[in-house]
Amino acid sequence: MSDKYRVAMYIRVACANQAEVNSQKCKLTDYAHQHNMDVGGVYTDNGESGLSLGRPALARLLADVKAGGVKTVLVKDLCRLSRNFEDMTRLTDDIFPKYGVRVVAVNDRHDSANNESQFFGSEELRRVFAGFHHENRNRRRQRQRLR
Image (cartoon, rainbow, N blue to C red):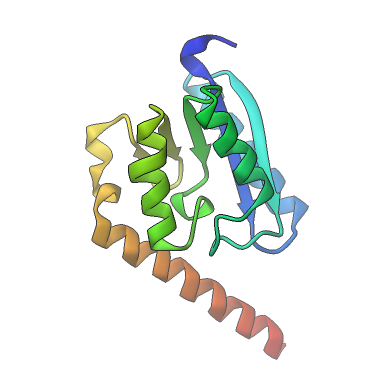
Protein backbone atom coordinates (compact mmCIF):
# COMPACT_ATOMS: atom_id res chain seq x y z
CA MET A 1 0.00 0.00 0.00
CA SER A 2 1.44 3.36 -0.96
CA ASP A 3 2.09 5.93 1.74
CA LYS A 4 -0.17 8.41 -0.03
CA TYR A 5 -3.27 6.23 0.19
CA ARG A 6 -3.32 4.70 3.66
CA VAL A 7 -7.08 4.32 3.51
CA ALA A 8 -9.33 2.81 6.16
CA MET A 9 -13.01 1.99 5.75
CA TYR A 10 -15.11 2.48 8.86
CA ILE A 11 -18.46 0.68 8.96
CA ARG A 12 -21.02 0.93 11.74
CA VAL A 13 -24.53 -0.41 12.08
CA ALA A 14 -26.59 0.05 15.24
CA CYS A 15 -28.41 -3.28 15.08
CA ALA A 16 -26.29 -6.30 14.22
CA ASN A 17 -27.01 -6.75 10.52
CA GLN A 18 -24.47 -8.47 8.30
CA ALA A 19 -26.37 -7.54 5.12
CA GLU A 20 -26.07 -3.82 5.97
CA VAL A 21 -22.39 -4.26 6.87
CA ASN A 22 -21.83 -5.90 3.47
CA SER A 23 -23.78 -3.14 1.71
CA GLN A 24 -21.66 -0.41 3.32
CA LYS A 25 -18.45 -2.30 2.56
CA CYS A 26 -19.44 -2.72 -1.09
CA LYS A 27 -20.27 0.99 -1.46
CA LEU A 28 -16.97 2.04 0.13
CA THR A 29 -14.96 -0.48 -1.88
CA ASP A 30 -16.51 0.81 -5.10
CA TYR A 31 -15.66 4.39 -4.14
CA ALA A 32 -12.08 3.44 -3.28
CA HIS A 33 -11.62 1.66 -6.61
CA GLN A 34 -13.12 4.56 -8.57
CA HIS A 35 -10.71 6.95 -6.85
CA ASN A 36 -7.61 4.74 -7.13
CA MET A 37 -7.31 4.22 -3.38
CA ASP A 38 -5.65 1.23 -1.75
CA VAL A 39 -7.68 0.17 1.26
CA GLY A 40 -5.41 -0.98 4.03
CA GLY A 41 -8.00 -1.78 6.67
CA VAL A 42 -11.69 -2.29 7.36
CA TYR A 43 -12.97 -1.40 10.82
CA THR A 44 -16.47 -2.71 11.55
CA ASP A 45 -18.70 -2.03 14.52
CA ASN A 46 -21.69 -4.34 13.96
CA GLY A 47 -24.47 -3.76 16.47
CA GLU A 48 -22.90 -0.64 18.04
CA SER A 49 -24.74 2.60 18.77
CA GLY A 50 -23.44 5.81 17.25
CA LEU A 51 -24.36 7.80 20.35
CA SER A 52 -21.04 7.04 22.05
CA LEU A 53 -17.43 6.84 20.89
CA GLY A 54 -16.92 3.73 23.05
CA ARG A 55 -16.90 1.26 20.15
CA PRO A 56 -14.19 -1.40 19.69
CA ALA A 57 -13.50 -0.91 15.96
CA LEU A 58 -13.59 2.89 16.28
CA ALA A 59 -11.06 2.65 19.12
CA ARG A 60 -8.76 0.55 16.89
CA LEU A 61 -9.20 3.02 14.02
CA LEU A 62 -8.34 5.99 16.25
CA ALA A 63 -5.28 4.16 17.61
CA ASP A 64 -4.11 3.54 14.03
CA VAL A 65 -4.80 7.19 13.13
CA LYS A 66 -2.70 8.36 16.09
CA ALA A 67 0.08 5.92 15.14
CA GLY A 68 0.15 7.42 11.63
CA GLY A 69 -1.11 4.29 9.91
CA VAL A 70 -4.25 5.90 8.44
CA LYS A 71 -4.41 9.02 6.28
CA THR A 72 -7.93 8.69 4.83
CA VAL A 73 -11.10 7.42 6.48
CA LEU A 74 -13.97 6.35 4.23
CA VAL A 75 -17.49 6.15 5.68
CA LYS A 76 -20.89 5.71 4.06
CA ASP A 77 -22.08 8.93 5.72
CA LEU A 78 -20.92 11.10 8.58
CA CYS A 79 -23.42 9.65 11.04
CA ARG A 80 -21.54 6.34 10.81
CA LEU A 81 -18.80 8.09 12.80
CA SER A 82 -21.19 9.47 15.39
CA ARG A 83 -24.80 10.44 15.98
CA ASN A 84 -23.69 12.73 18.79
CA PHE A 85 -22.89 16.25 17.59
CA GLU A 86 -20.12 16.91 20.10
CA ASP A 87 -18.41 13.60 19.36
CA MET A 88 -18.68 14.08 15.60
CA THR A 89 -17.20 17.56 15.93
CA ARG A 90 -14.36 16.21 18.07
CA LEU A 91 -13.57 13.64 15.39
CA THR A 92 -14.00 15.77 12.26
CA ASP A 93 -12.71 19.10 13.56
CA ASP A 94 -10.09 18.09 16.12
CA ILE A 95 -8.77 14.53 16.05
CA PHE A 96 -8.65 13.78 12.32
CA PRO A 97 -7.20 17.19 11.31
CA LYS A 98 -4.62 16.99 14.11
CA TYR A 99 -3.23 13.81 12.52
CA GLY A 100 -3.66 14.99 8.93
CA VAL A 101 -6.45 12.53 8.20
CA ARG A 102 -8.86 13.11 5.33
CA VAL A 103 -12.49 12.08 5.90
CA VAL A 104 -14.70 11.06 2.99
CA ALA A 105 -18.42 10.48 3.59
CA VAL A 106 -19.59 8.97 0.30
CA ASN A 107 -23.38 9.48 0.54
CA ASP A 108 -22.98 12.96 2.02
CA ARG A 109 -20.58 13.93 -0.78
CA HIS A 110 -18.25 15.21 1.91
CA ASP A 111 -14.49 15.18 1.47
CA SER A 112 -12.52 17.12 4.05
CA ALA A 113 -9.75 17.60 1.47
CA ASN A 114 -12.17 19.36 -0.90
CA ASN A 115 -13.22 22.94 -0.16
CA GLU A 116 -16.38 22.46 -2.23
CA SER A 117 -17.79 20.07 0.37
CA GLN A 118 -17.93 22.71 3.09
CA PHE A 119 -21.74 22.51 3.02
CA PHE A 120 -21.39 19.65 5.49
CA GLY A 121 -18.66 21.46 7.44
CA SER A 122 -21.19 23.82 8.94
CA GLU A 123 -21.69 23.20 12.64
CA GLU A 124 -25.40 23.94 12.46
CA LEU A 125 -25.98 21.59 9.54
CA ARG A 126 -24.09 18.74 11.17
CA ARG A 127 -26.20 19.22 14.30
CA VAL A 128 -29.39 19.09 12.22
CA PHE A 129 -28.31 15.99 10.30
CA ALA A 130 -27.15 14.12 13.40
CA GLY A 131 -30.44 14.91 15.15
CA PHE A 132 -32.49 14.02 12.09
CA HIS A 133 -30.83 10.63 11.68
CA HIS A 134 -31.25 9.87 15.38
CA GLU A 135 -34.96 10.80 15.41
CA ASN A 136 -35.60 8.98 12.13
CA ARG A 137 -34.01 5.81 13.51
CA ASN A 138 -36.11 6.06 16.68
CA ARG A 139 -39.31 6.38 14.62
CA ARG A 140 -38.40 3.31 12.53
CA ARG A 141 -37.74 1.28 15.68
CA GLN A 142 -41.02 2.40 17.19
CA ARG A 143 -42.95 1.35 14.04
CA GLN A 144 -41.20 -2.04 14.07
CA ARG A 145 -42.21 -2.62 17.69
CA LEU A 146 -45.86 -1.84 16.85
CA ARG A 147 -45.98 -4.52 14.13
